[in-house]
Amino acid sequence: MEYVTPPLPAAVLWDMDGTIVDTEPLWMGAEEALVLRHGGTWTHADSLSLVGSDLLEAAAFIRERGGIPMTPEQIVEHMVGEVLKGIADGLTWQPGVFELLTELRELGVPQALVTMSYRRLAEAVVRRLPDGLFGAVVTGDEVTNGKPHPEPYLTAARELGVDPAGSIVIEDSPRGAAAGLAAGALVLSIPNAVAAVPEPGLVVIDSLAGMRAKDLLASFDDSALDSRSTFLS
Image (cartoon, rainbow, N blue to C red; front, side):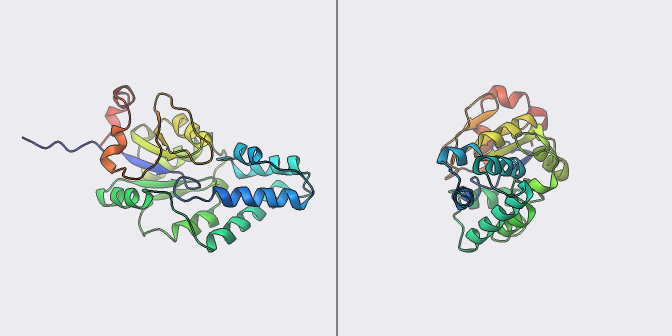
C-alpha cells in the first residue's frame, strides 16, 4: 500500500506572548505596578482586556485608566523595559512549542514570528530559541495597524513569499485570532489568559503538547480545508 504524506501548511505564523512564551504575567504585573505607583486602581479584568492589543492602544488605556502623567509612547517604553527585566530572569516556554517549531523547520515549512511586542523584546526571546526557526519577524513597532487588523499577518506572509490562505496562524488571544482570520489564514488558538471562541476557520485546543506538523491541518474540518486546498503543500 502506498503511503500518502499528510498535507502540510504553506507556512506557520506564530504569535509570541502567551503562545510561544508565557510572558503575559510579566505584562500584567508591569501594568498593575505602574498604575498603583501613580495612585490609580487596576484590576485583573483590566489586564485581560488588553491581552493581544497593539501596545500604543494598550498604553492609552492604561494612561486613562490610571491617570498616569506619561505619554502612551513613554508608557510603552516603560512596559517593554519591565518585561525585558522579567525575561532576563528566565522564560517559561509553552508546552509543545519547542518540539513543533523544530519539526516544522526540519520539514522545511516556512515560519514567522508575528507579535505586538516591539523588536527589541522579540529579539530577546528569539535569541533564546534555536537558530533558523523564523524566516520573518514582524513586530508591533514596525506595522501601521496592530492586531486585530490583518496587517501583521499579511506582512509576515508577504515576507515569507506565501499566500496566507494556505497558512496556519497559531495564537492565544481573541484579538490575534481575529487578525489571523482577517488575513485569510486558518487559526489554531491555544487559550492562555483569554480564550477565543471557535468559528469557521478557527479551532481552539488546550495545548500544543503532543502536536505534530501532520496534525496541524488535520485539526480543521473539511469545509475549512476545501476553501484553501489550492494553497496547501
